[in-house]
Image (cartoon, rainbow, N blue to C red; front, side, top):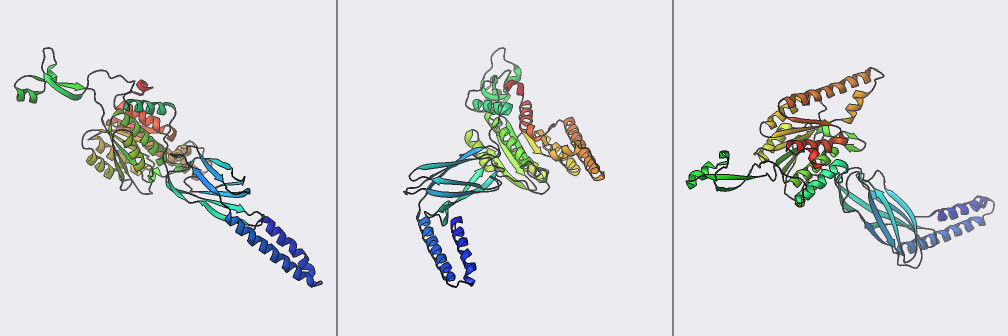
Length: 437
């Protein structure tokens, strides 16, 4: 590629070409000058292509949506001449809205760093790179373009770092998983632990009658505190979760909150099952205990995307009941933005509640909330405001009707979704938030 210096020389040679009409020998002079410039350009391009640049890129091991990370690129040349570089780091739209560019002078046999901050806009699988560089030849006449680093696959996860009370809850859950929980268990346990002979003063209600009949003497059942329950999480990935606000969809917020709930429940020792669904079952994950199980769940769920279809709540509930037939706590995370869907969701939640204790987490649509609070200036805006208010009213009726049937309901905005979900979960398992910070 010719540099600005080459174009300048060629432009200057066109000036005497205008006088060649009256002085014919000037045309030969111009052609000779053009030939010399082209020869020098070709030689400079050949030298530029022979220049060697060693490049290394350091990417953070964990990239999370919306969390700023520092990317460092190091350049070094073994040659004896400094190199003039123009760099272009191609970035997938999930990572950034535009590529990163830089220009630098690379001293000989010295290392130079180029760093920039990156906060991924989305999540999922994407390609990072390639890194393209243009090297200026020693004569300054030609740029040699080459691919310094090839593209590489990378993953962007949902939000993983939390501050405030959510962060403290997750820290306490991790400490409990490591056997360092500051929480004290009180009262009587409910999980069978062992059998022993009956002693005077033991409560008759704890007599194990089958063991008594088998041994021919009174046998008592000893109980301990339950080490963990069963948790089923149903995550809606349908049309209602696809709307975005400030580059994040409702599914982005819901998935981050679900994964925080999964970490808290796993730290308590719960056996967790996750069912993600739209008009079909998208993912089914049984989370193994411990940190390895949490990593497996992140790897299985991080790239979920909302689909523009109506969600089949009934099919998801059937799948959840098949995966977890024993009584458990079921958390259904969705967003109600349609009056017709509200009744279907009510019937589905009541059907789930017949088998499991049910917690419905309803994520408010920020656009609907803003429209309901707006002041209309015309008939169209007034109609939109009434429609938004009807949706909010339907959500309140849904929550009131479900609470009357024993279903716990949480309706909240995205910025409080994780905290409200963890709070409701802890209350459901009999461990109020005030006891853990």
